[in-house]
Image (tube, rainbow, N blue to C red; front, side):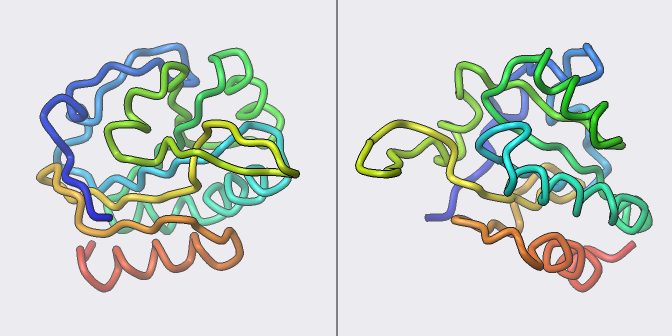
Length: 157
């Protein structure tokens, strides 16, 4: 399902791991890699965050900022950033409003239990604030390279 980034999503204020409040609109003029992940400190989420960390400079080279989003509270984001040396912001979406806006807050099943949670997803937002690419049900292995390659090939430097 393809979604559009609405004005309300662009204007939504979210607390970032640096303690500041940010809006997606604040990044106009930059490409944005907005990636949603289920939970700080879990194996898949740690691998994905560290992959983005390891490619951070390459994303900067193509005028892209990386923003991770999960429903974890600020203190967990701060610990996650510190433990893994993440050079980008993690956004707090405890009420999952942004996740719902982009349709990544989904019914999940695990070991016979059903619960609501984040479906691992990534959105590429261009310098004008338009979603130009999305990945849903992301598999971590190779995903960061795929996102970087998309920006290099389609959005230039």
